[in-house]
Amino acid sequence: MALIVQKYGGTSVGSVERIEAVADKAVAARAKGDDLVIVVSAMSGETNRLIALAKEITDAPSAREMDVLMSTGEQVTIALLSIALEKRGCSARSYTGAQVHILTDSAHNKARIRDIDAARVRADLEAGRVVVIAGFQGVDQHGNITTLGRGGSDTTAVAMAAALGAHECQIFTDVDGVYTTDPRVEPKARKLDRITFEEMLEMASLGSKVLQIRSVEFAGKYSVPLRVLSSFEEGEGTLITFEDEQMEEAKISGIAFTRDEAKLTILGVPDKPGVAHEILGPIAEANIEVDMIVQNIAEDATTDFTFTVQRNDFDKAKRILRAVADRLGAREILGDDSIGKISLVGVGMRSHAGIASQMFQALAKESINIRMISTSEIKISVVVDVKYLELGVRALHDAFGLAEQPGAKNG
Ligand code: ADP
Ligand code: ASP
Ligand code: MG
Image 1 (spheres, protein in one colour):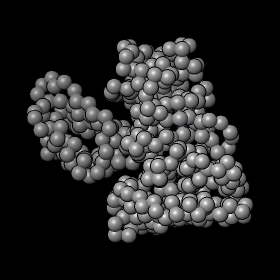
Image 2: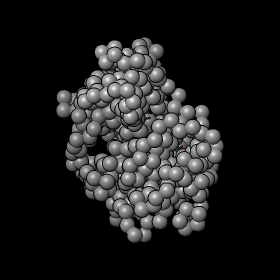
Image 3: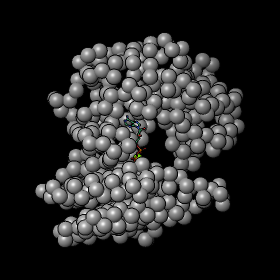
Image 4: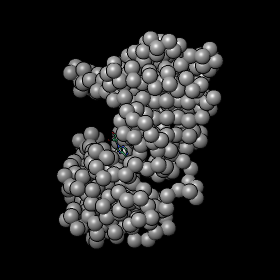
């Protein structure tokens, strides 16, 4: 008998029929003798609908009240799923995040889980009940409702699995596993049977939203066996594993991308100590996350400085930069808010030279201009015009033979 934590995303609980299908799956798992904790998202589109309601009132609703609002989506699905389970004669109980003491910090809209008191869940499991928990939400030490950031139900599930010492955490979604890239952009994308935590972490942080990045961090930290599978069809899905010798010997395991980037350049700043800090300090103080940073070689005692931010921080960052430019006597500010980022990810990159040049060649062949480049041990990212993003993803998928099993072109 095993203890399994299952998580069902928005599409998987998108209608009453879908919720009943989840209940059927749960009943089948119970019949095998497994103990079951189920974490659910809001019905698909619901979180966006709630956000839009608030935005009808004001552009700047308070983060605290947004959490109270957004957390209601998941409360609907836990109740409906428990009702569906009980209809099937399966004893079940639903709980909000606060009720099972998912204690978080107070960073509304992006709270981090600090602790879970799993006693209540354990008692229910011992009494033979299926426990249904609202994803994406918690409570801070003052009793305020918090949420964990978009896609946060993944993290609730993994954290719950860690707290309970579950045998496996299964993330059920609308694709049957983790693919070499988003199958909605590249239909030739191949499902991976396994991927390492390290690679999954890079893929998630570079834009593959199939798992929220914090869920992968959590799984790595607490060694939670994690699997991504389809709620619509049978299959083994993708197992996220620690690197071992059996891993596929691929140089590249996947391509991640983001469409929502923006780039800012400040031209003609003095080339002297402290300038980078003077530029980026105020940006950081405004809680704007900076991703890539490039500084040119100085020619005439002045230099140019470019960095990227998320598109929805673009206007704010530009305003801040304007003030900085005046202070530093910079020549000009340039901005571009229609760029995207494509990243190649693979632990095999460590031991293979020439991946970068192969990447640049493939993009050149499609006449895609590279605006910025950044590399780390297991990834290479390029910034391109967003209109060429999908073309670039497909060109790279092809150039690195990702549609084929490793050992073929990519081996
Ligand atoms: P859920 O609502 O179940 O949490 P998400 O929409 O958050 O589902 O995540 C699943 C989606 O992630 C898929 O529909 C797919 O379009 C997207 N996706 C992006 N990159 C990948 C990838 N490498 N492999 C699989 N799916 C991916
Ligand atoms: N419902 C939340 C969202 O749409 C959390 C989740 O689905 O994981 O982001
Ligand atoms: Mg998700």
